[in-house]
Image (cartoon, rainbow, N blue to C red):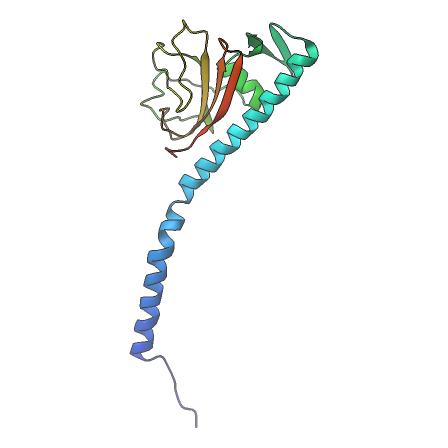
Length: 183
């Protein structure tokens, strides 16, 4: 007749040990996915911002603009021949809707907008200015300014999780990129 076969206790223990080892090795990789997602999201925003600024720069040259340019049907103000480092500029460049609410506590209260919070027109000496690593602005009465965009659930801080645009009007250059050390 038929002989009943099953797993021995040793085989079950071996399978449990192997699954335990896999869980210990694989779990940290899966648990870190949300951090990686925010990092990738901010890097994507930084890349989109860089591309948009290059398009705006082309529009400035084509129009020989001094004060403002038309960018996809919206107006962007210029500071020393470059897009102003304002929240309005970021909204236009990235085609983001104006947030319905606002907090002045961006360094202590996590962003609670649908996707991102935006802050602009910041400079050394202004309350709440956040210095971007490797891009310190000189305190020159607010001529050089920075703007930031960061994801929901985060606060704005120097070693944080945000994309930035800096208009160094005093040197007629701009910088853009992302900081992901705090994602």
